[in-house]
Length: 495
Image (tube, rainbow, N blue to C red; front, side, top):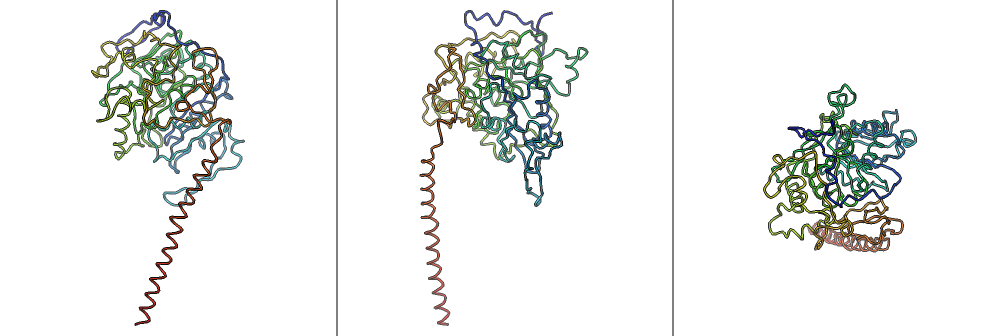
């Protein structure tokens, strides 16, 4: 029996020639072999214990752990278990000392020598955020760009994930077998609690790979992917083109982080951020594929420390959340705030908006949904035989925006540790870094030192302004005080 997909209702056979039915148009072939390094981005919200287990699983199960870099964005309270500290505890290495100063305050000191004693400590880069400053999944994942270096591949997962043996080799093999430079290997991970069911010939789910099929339209008018997955594939011989994407497991070349970076301005949004980023990926030429085998497993159980997955959201932030949803709806073309020119608003998003390689109309047809009519894909379900949608490779870059006449461009992303210009597929020649718009692709290099003179001028101006305001005010106060004291003394004498 050949490869099949169970769509939640019935079986669909996978047609072997479905992907080749687009005539002469084909995806861009992988450009060249890089150094094979993998950057694993992990956002963690008050989940230090499970996060530590995730990091250990990454290194223990990698075939080549030397080529793995972890980018951890940890959102914690000072009293919480820290992920990196808990990871080093597995090896008997103390990394920090906590001292409780008062009921709501801890003094935290690092332990000298921890870098040498804790295994692969220097392969873990960390951005630390106080939990009260957390703004949701998009905000946390957006921060990983601050610690993304020149790694070739990028993977994103959740902080409670387990890895199969040789996951790094498997993931790269799956990606290469798509024959697509803009391929993204992604699916909703299977449950960690059911690992034994997938792990042996006798397991009831052996050979099954979760695959999302149905797409529903949420109350906020934005499509949602069902999780855990409502379907699964079995017997796949190569990765299968998909119409959904999961932020819980995604593997691709790292140029996706420059071309489709996470939008930090969509704050306090949960659920809607997955379809919005998928739409941005797809319109810029990226394609998602379900892998032939499970690479990671996800812990769907509650946080053992008792913290809720959406604890970062408070009702007082509802106004900001609504603004974020309007921002998403703007580039999806399903509404805008009153009095706002949608084309200008979209253009101001810059790289956070849609691309020009494919249209939203094509995406809706590909997925079987209609945003204007709020119709899902339940009646026209096709989960096994998606057809690749071609685009003009020679004329349209993935960096081109659907709307580009911005009047007030949003701040565009900066990658402090990444100075590598990626290959984007039009030719076999490496592109000239000077050809790129600095507003859409910015990297700090040794050839572009910080503007020290400008910083000095601003510092000097601030110093003068401070002296004029505060020193002069202080002198005036002294004069006034003397006069007041003089009057009091005179009054005393008269008495």
